[in-house]
Length: 272
Image 1 (cartoon, rainbow, N blue to C red):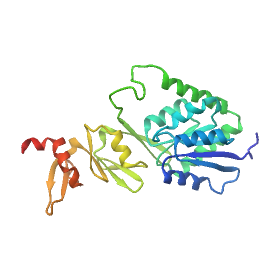
Image 2 (image 1 turned 90 degrees about the horizontal axis):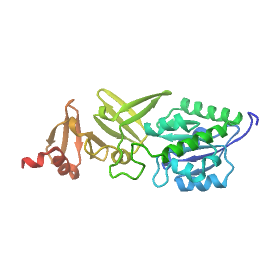
Image 3 (image 1 turned 30 degrees about the horizontal axis):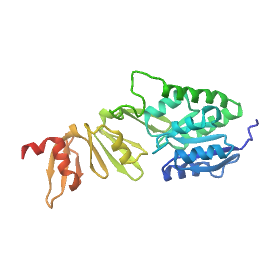
Image 4 (image 1 turned 60 degrees about the horizontal axis):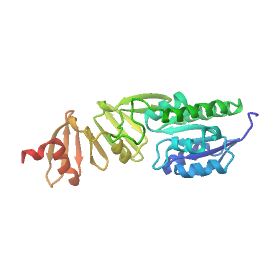
């Protein structure tokens, strides 16, 4: 296999902007062809079975069948090389350690993407895909092996995020969820506010709301999630608007429709 081999690539992500970003990064390159794009795990399975692929950019966390389900359905022995794409550290670190050729942690920059693509070409050129398939099989074995932790989907107690990995300029930092004061939306990104520091990740607020422990966090506005024990006061502004003041002094708007739930969560309804 020569260095001039054309890489036939599949992009899988349920987010339109994420798919478009990968397509833009790959567009116009020599010896690279995006042969298909899929917005779900099921479509990814169909595409992998249909096309002769060298490489898949595979989103891990998708509704329905996730990235690991895709590998399970195809079988690691039939999978092309995989670069996992994810916003969550537990997926990224596990994939990088035991299964994936590489991973891209949202939001990734151009330099990090170049590193991943170059690594993919080198592995494929050196015929190391069989090694990657063995590692994918290990990942599936780990998913199915009983342990002290409940298996996926079998526990009544949901698993909430404990850490979120953020990437900037090719470096990855793991942010403990317990250190986050509040989260705000910024277009397709979410900003994690930790003291005076802001970390940016490419994730939807709804997804974060679903993955954060509701005993600790509450979405008080369509664009704001706040840690409950950081709230110092609930403010009633002129005109019927509401806000919370955090211990840091920061004020955040509260939707009228969420005020009663917030009062209940803070125990203020018991004072009526």
